[in-house]
Image (cartoon, rainbow, N blue to C red):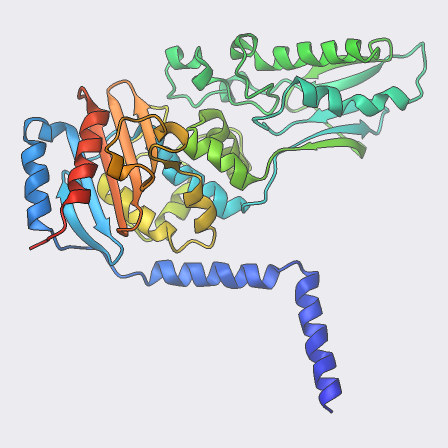
Length: 411
């Protein structure tokens, strides 16, 4: 009897392994939903000594700054203009990257494939891999050396041109679109569309590099590149080669630690399965609402924060960070942030020695905008600080964090 029981238990465990942990993933998701829905509501329990110090420090520029500091029990110990909507710059990625991670999972990859079509032609299906470069392009066509061909008939390699109207979020300025950090968001990218040649027309640049790769491999007499419109019907029967990107949890380091706009926009579009990038987006808005925090004054215009139309509150961002601690992928998420004085966009910030290595945060910068939101490690404090229209903003943010760190008694 015991042997039969153990046999059936073994079958059950084997079934769970066969579905590759899907039951565990489902359980983790259900637990996450439950924990976020039942999280203790935030309340104001202001630390008077700290609040007073920060009010004194920010007295001359109070109208330009918002500060919210929240402990892990849900008490706001500091609130200065926390509910005023401000331009967040790349602190917008705090929200969009969390959405992408939650929807796609940490092991999702962006794939570029070479496919054989029913009519004998070839088709390159791209997905915006930010690391895809000329070396990968040569690797993609490498196996074509071994194919037979009709010397009187050159075979087309199809590349979809895409809609230029969807290359940038509509609210990005034309000045930003001419810079590498504002490169067009396309599936066919070469090194994140960051070369000067690809800023104006990334598809032409991709085709140019593909034609160079064909010549380099002595394949120009067999194949030619054919650009078609986005709605061109594709019917392929086999995949010849696939180039996979790094998994999403690695790409998140580009998004949050390095503040890479292109990658933020691309993975966001994968999350929506929609490259039109229209806002407001119902799927994204519903997900934000499901996180059970105060986002009433938030305005979303893009995923990366380059748009000046975005608005968030430090009150809402600090709440959101507290909820992300309950996310099933929280370790992947927070490990993608910069570490003050150590890595990422905060590596070279002039900061007090006692804070280096202890501030895990996402930073943001635009003209007249500076934002830093994250966690003070060891103290269990979530914070969000956004400064608009003020000089020496980074210095002031570091001084504020130092005051927070050096204030122990709250009464």
